[in-house]
Length: 155
Length: 154
Image 1 (cartoon, chains in turn green, red):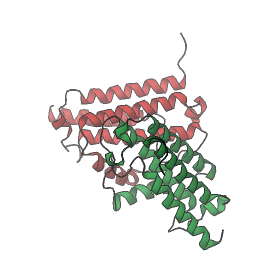
Image 2 (tube, chains in turn cyan, blue):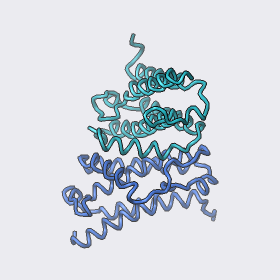
Image 3 (cartoon, helix red, strand yellow):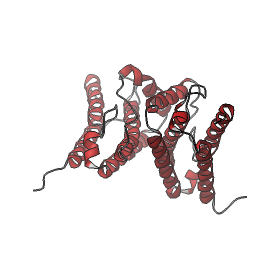
Image 4 (cartoon, chains in turn cyan, purple):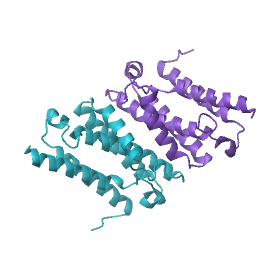
């Protein structure tokens, strides 16, 4: 069911997806969130990854809003792995408190950028690898990975 | 006359570095700025590289301003080269107008973040690869561009 304007709908879906992530980590201790048991990544790593993607997304929305082109297009394979592993490994020592604060801060900026973006910048077709609505599917995908891990580990 | 605060000094340094970069570019055509003559990078590549680090710097300052830790530890050239090369390659297709606009926007975001950051965090909060304003980095790339122009006599 669509609710309100496209911009409102987008913001609603982004919020809903992020809420799914937060539900997926509810009740986990810092030790549990630091276990690198999901193909070498911990829950904190997954959250840092989401933050890094939103950091890129924030600047991509600005670029498209100014009439520019996206700067990440067709980023797959080695460049994507380099980016993800570099950022995630650098952020691994951060506390859970900071990881969550960084995640929230970055999403706030993305939502503010969306709120102020011209209509053409709300279309995912204007973007490359980090579309304006990209964190909807991305957040849910990572929430599902965390949920599956919790089921496997019974925690 | 009021003495400058550390924050004011940082902003002044940043503006001076920005001016130095813009002076290094002055008068170059888009074709000249697209030549990969500086160890495989063009002037545009150098600018998109500066933009990348200022974009990361904006979020780093925001982290530190909230009393968090920096997220990018001190790194060797070899450690950051893969990231730099990947991003430069992805931004190579951008127009000169966008490259400059993106850099100007990133500079403005860093300046806003510095202006909003508690003074004591600006002084003590940065221990990683990304400093609070990136002045030395801007100057270093401006010097590379200037040296290339002198070699090429353009």
